[in-house]
Length: 241
View (cartoon, rainbow, N blue to C red):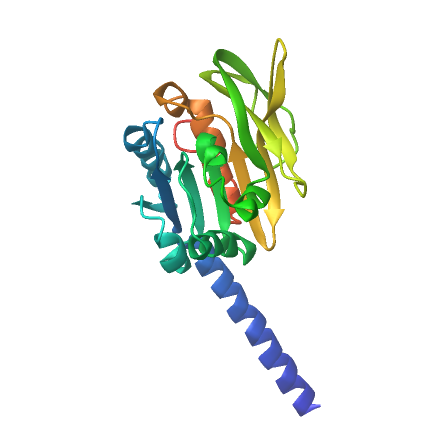
């Protein structure tokens, strides 16, 4: 009987310790590698807009990089990768670093032209789900298509000045559409989520320029996605409801 009591006491101690560890991890800042670069888009001025919003939550620590070799050398330092790039190509080592990070449980948030990047990599296309095929532009409504997902739960349709991306989808793509746009003959998903191995993937076609990046609804969508990708409780950024 004494031996049984001792075993139970030790077991309960492990559970308590584990509970403390989980709580501690939940209070740690989410470390973000913000990958940016390429031509066409104003990544130098747009990305600080979002990093400021993320850091005002006091839950995120953002590190910018334009060095693709960081994908093979530094991903272990981060919880999620946010990407706003255009064009460029991945070496096999960089591809393994990025896709392996997500496959092994890292979080990923792709913005706009992330789907117009790394077109030499089929593995990246499969991870992201879609590859840029064309776009329109102007002011349009983003419709909340999935009201049950943690990222979009409680959000309402919103207006935005932006580009309307269309995509070719990878043959293995299995995404859950969160937002859509319907305008004339343009009808497509604008945001989706999926899993890749053990990791979580979010992508939004929104985010062409400053008009989009300063839109509070766009900011809310991406910040919520960052929490979700990091496997944390989804929250709104400050002063946005």
